[in-house]
Length: 380
Image 1: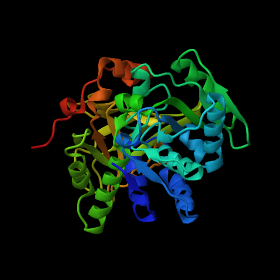
Image 2 (image 1 turned 30 degrees about the vertical axis):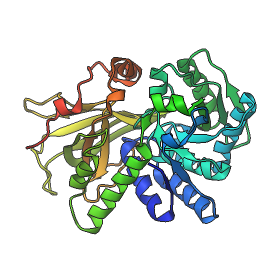
Image 3 (image 1 turned 135 degrees about the vertical axis):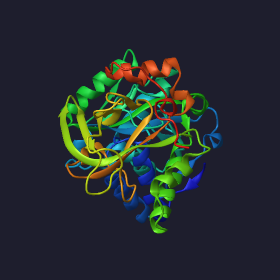
């Protein structure tokens, strides 16, 4: 999908990206304001379909790295992303032809747009995760054997470096260490590859899908319709064909800490109560996250106690029950009334090789991957 971003559709794109971010990727509000500033300065954000690029065009994935909780106080800037991009260009000895998001999630769907406007480059409608993941080797590019380095990395203070790592796991480890020393947030430009390689290895159309999701949610609110029905309808016929409401309830506990460059913890929601939430008052769902939601487990005194409702790489989203607006992991708070909504990932992310890279075992979870549509069948 090719289109030129406008202030009118920017809000929809940011909201849809936050849904795909499955709780992570950073707060899209900050990134949206940065993109809006670029647009109001007269710069263009051109989002292009992969098919429009020549095979040998150089494409680079741009992202911010760090714990989302840091971004609340350490506001990002377009200069950092451009600095990382320029550092990589100097190392490669050639200019980049297009950039793309590393992941489909919140702030990290916005920052490539900011960098593209500042550098006057097009943005490819594709990414390497189809959602957000906490580590930069957790991408379909890595599954296909594409090296992530050389990688440019920069700070807010004018520091920059180029990482040449032995493999993508070491690239993540080295970049994470630099990110911590850069104040917990850094700007990256990685996975330099040809457009032909992107076409073979990326999850296509994720920016267009984000716009579609955001538009559906906004339209539902404007017409006083159920936002979750609208979201399910928007997903139908896409690579993310299965959407499920898993749970509705109130946040009764949040255990969250920033450690090792990640926001880690759990959030517990309880059903039943004054709002008329479905289920018995004893029904709960516990979501474990590492920047992004990883697994949702049902709790309660019934036969489903301990049952997994959805698990990575399928998407687990926490959305405001009334509006359908996504709530990221750093914004979770006691008393919020949320709906837990899960989305199936594309087939490219469900192969044995992909699951080894970003399935449950990659996060130390002792539960096997089972597709969402098997764990939680659709309601007739």
